[in-house]
Length: 236
Figure 1 (tube, rainbow, N blue to C red):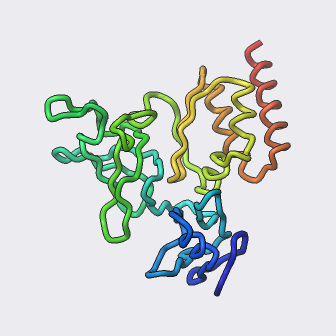
Figure 2 (cartoon, rainbow, N blue to C red):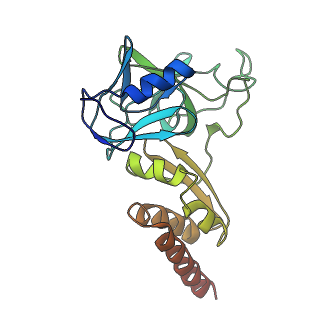
Figure 3 (cartoon, helix red, strand yellow):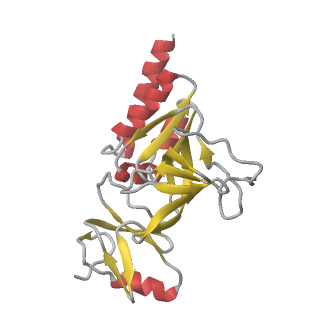
């Protein structure tokens, strides 16, 4: 069935709007969409979304991550086999990570990565027919914020919540940073890493993120103010 942006979609539906955008320039297909010859088909149920200029995806509630090229993910090193690390990213199979996929890494200068380390990485290969592969550098060979995440706290959430807090229209991050300092890394695979000045503040940030999934922007602002006042009361 033909669908448009904002419609509730089901697997097998197609969008002529996306096809028309592709005729005018490059388009980016996110989760829930797949191109077959000339048509773009929906592969999972949800709501068809668009972000300017030409990024399209299906917004749905799910916890199982399906790798998509170019997305940032948070993984845990579960095995080291020769020159390859096996990393759990929450998908149906572990991703591979070469020791050369770090900034300034060489055969003599190997990165210090151990089993159990938490990594912030980018999906390099994501295909239904191939093993997923991740890297800890950008297209210029720089690590940026990618790499081993030291200390901090990691928790899981729905993929929908990750997309919500990363949306520029969501006021959660802005509201929280106005109340107390913290660091955050959000993986599109439904994992979030946070680190604040104390364990109490770290837990408060995590609880605020989990509680915001079904709240409006006004309710999020009010919640952050309430949490900040409670923390101030404990400190005093």
